[in-house]
Amino acid sequence: MMEPRRPLLPALGLSLSIGCCTCAAASTLVLPPPNFEGHSELDVLPSSAQTASYLSSSAGVRATDGSWNAGGSSVPTSDSIALVVGETQSTGFYSAAAGTLKVSGSALASAIGDLSTPGHIASASALAGYDDFLLATTSSGTGAVSIQFSLEVDGRLSASQPPLQDPYGYLGGASVNASLSVQPAYSTPGMQCTPACAVNYASSQDEAGDGVYTASSSGSPVQSFTVTVPSGTLLSLTGQIYVNDSGDGYGISAFSTASNYLDTMHSFADVLTPGATLVSSSGHDYASPAATVPEPEGWAMLVTGLCAIGFMARRRRQEFPG
Image 1: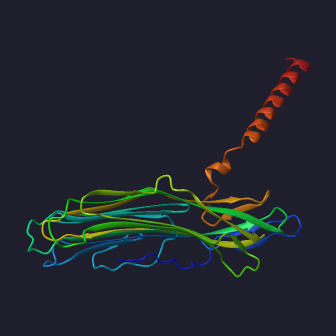
Image 2: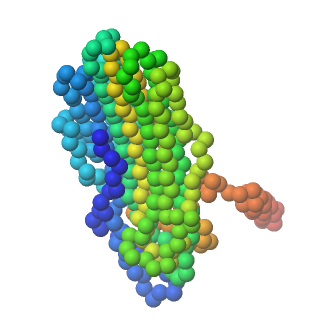
Image 3: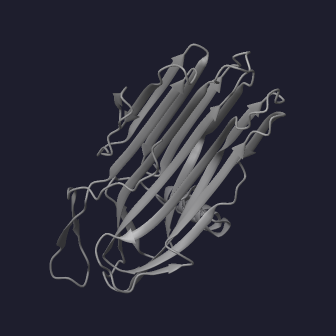
């Protein structure tokens, strides 16, 4: 099965002009374009005495020989695939966009009904990721910019198995791994991360041979870290989520595993330095919902301002009727 891997640094692309009040002229910085990665690989073996079937998808390109393309896409990518052989099947889905990643997978096989017959085998994996580039600047073009990056994961894993009726052990399991990391696109002295420059989330669920077991990521705490860099620093932001579902039965044992992260993995970047800005090469606004909602003091100021405008307009009508 494929393993998570970091996208390659894409070629240079988008051009932005950055102006600063202390500069006589604006300077032009070329931002690399974003890179989106999506992969899913399915394997089905009805029994060890038969030939295995494969299906894979890489950024929308499918293959049936078990191979997959490590390249990515310059635009958001998604695909959903399924592989069914008799009563054994596996499915995979991925969707990769800036700030939002979705994946799911499942593996299912029915019992053969014969202890002397090799069992079914099925597996599914799905990966979604992006590599975006962020330019952090202050209003003056000097000083430092502090940014808080956050990772939020929402989904569930499940593995089910009737009580074991044969002496053979393994049946099925599901796992998820998610990460968010930041690094300078070029060598940047003075970059500081608190407590680190990355956060990770991982969970797994195995069957125990006596029912349905579920591990949920819903309600998991949002993980955050803070990065401080000199104004004008170009940052590489990488988000990735990977799920794997697999199982094999023997004799009369059946299994099913599933991973559902369609609610999904979100990543945010909130500028903490007043007056500073953060521009992404994808054009995506990484500000968290909380950062875009005014605080109570902000609402109070807004209401006060609207009342003042209404009062002035009414007074003007009284002074200049008609």
